[in-house]
Length: 255
Ligand code: ADP
Ligand code: MG
Image (tube, rainbow, N blue to C red; front, side, top):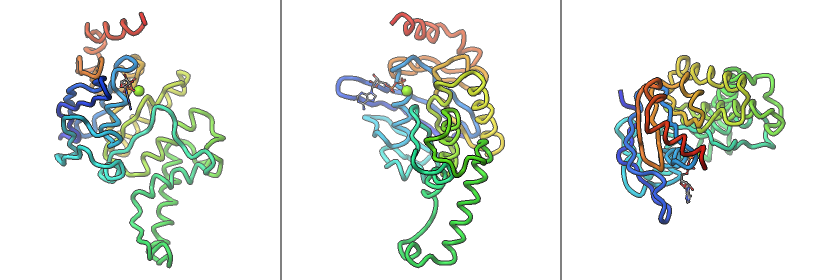
């Protein structure tokens, strides 16, 4: 079943067409990889999917609902969560609080509730707290809950970002270069975690990865971008030997 569909997604920044007529379908429970050289529009495509930018033309559908141009918080509520290429955490908040911030988008609290703290609301808070602990357990950070997020090692911060994104209870998780800057063993840990998110939490994943090798062992289906346009898609072992893809990456090394 189709979870997400982009139809001719296009965005211009002044004279630059950063994403150019991209058609893409994400199937339920897929791990779909997006590859492409630097500047090929991968992050911008995520920014369109998550409402940071409205496409110049084209449409985005989540489970057949047209979400094109919706505000980011509504898209989160619809079930799309993401992490960023450059880590964005609240460094001066605790690890646990960072996860609670993610959950907050799903807490149904009214203003009166916030003032009088009804019984129902206290129960909500307790549930949120327990859920946050479970998520920290899931990403291997349960012992670090009271630490300032800024004090975590780089790889741990990446995993905290994942926990925070999961806290919004997404159907679809968008990961922008989750292993960037990691050593091979840290990267492997994250890849295991991604598989576990799919198999244990039944969440569909779209993953941007600049490193083609990393992608080969992770994705079920790969879409390759160059200069904002889709140049190829298919199963990893076909994409690996795709002539256009190889040329796109060779071009990058010559820069
Ligand atoms: P990738 O993630 O594949 O490395 P990006 O999506 O970050 O590539 O960038 C694609 C192109 O879009 C680049 O040429 C970049 O400079 C341009 N771009 C992205 N965001 C903006 C913006 N807000 N204003 C102008 N140009 C942008
Ligand atoms: Mg990018």
